Image 1 (spheres, rainbow, N blue to C red):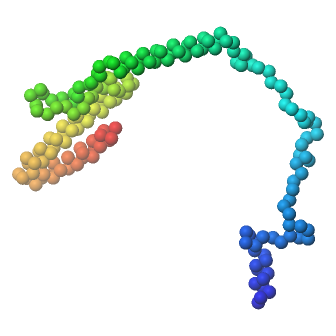
Image 2: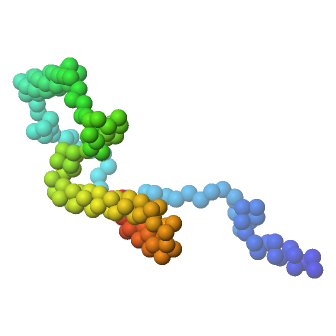
Image 3: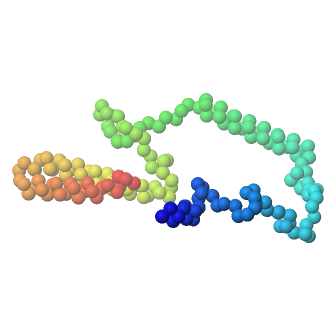
Length: 176
């Protein structure tokens, strides 16, 4: 029984049980790399590199580049100064459109012609008008629900079903 346990321990190799050296020393193996070098290559310093046209820059060219960079920096500084000194063009909130006598003010600024790229303006307007119509229908359904729900049970059920249908139908437009 003891012999079998010792044989099993010897057959399992791992970090805790490294293989025993066979015969010779326990030193690491050394690979001779000189055998991999082809015999037709020369060993010595690399060839000298010649300068390319991009590296041959004269003092005049450097001066021109420096002047151009300084000119661009001056233009940029002038633009920044103009932006700092210009009065801010605050856009007045215009949505929702409310009459002047109303004590409430519009909440945010909206201008499809300015804020939306030209290729998407038609689609955005279509979705906006659909959303406005759907909102109107939902508000009318809610008002009808409260007005007619006490009169007949059938009207109450119809109002709830239409409200549910329109509410679910309007969600994709709101997510856009």
